[in-house]
Image (cartoon, rainbow, N blue to C red; front, side, top):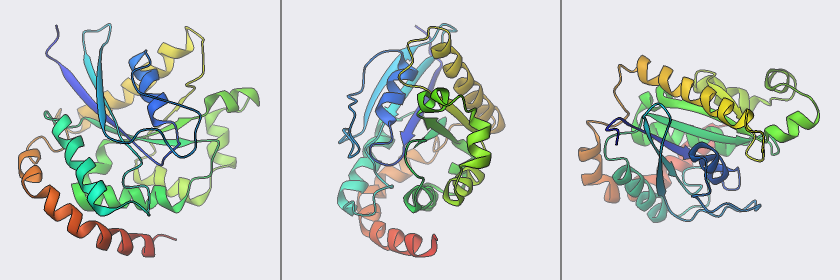
Length: 235
């Protein structure tokens, strides 16, 4: 088996379709996914797949941590620590999953700021916005660019700007055997672009050991302060 492994982490609000997106990337139903707006994933979970080019892709699904203003700090700290432990070799890309079917909210913007607060400003250099709900755009024959130029609110524009306008559209319901590999190909191209721009160095490759030592105590203590400060500044 290939020793080349790239690790990606799915983040976003509850019910945005992170688990379904993870399944589309893996090409199988590995993560539990249901048509619910309050989210199914309760804890971080990782599955891997071997791609045709020999690349091992590790996909970590997360609950709506960092994007839920009502989340308890102890729970958030525990889940972040688990996510870091799963990504032992570092994180190559973070996929911010946004649903076209729901309005982008302050929580998305605040969540990105929160990730920066805990993992450093450079986390933005590893982020990609994945729009889910491609089936709805196809129904109205509307390209993604058209949606972004006409229907994109200021919260979403700000989120995209922070992520370097890197984005891709996913249709997690498609049965089209041409579309499924094509959308994955587009995503992998963006991941490779991020890896190249960062000199092949994954996020937190050197910082993981240091972070895990103090994470449980420091995150749980500072989460509420950080969240209050950030949500107050995000309009």
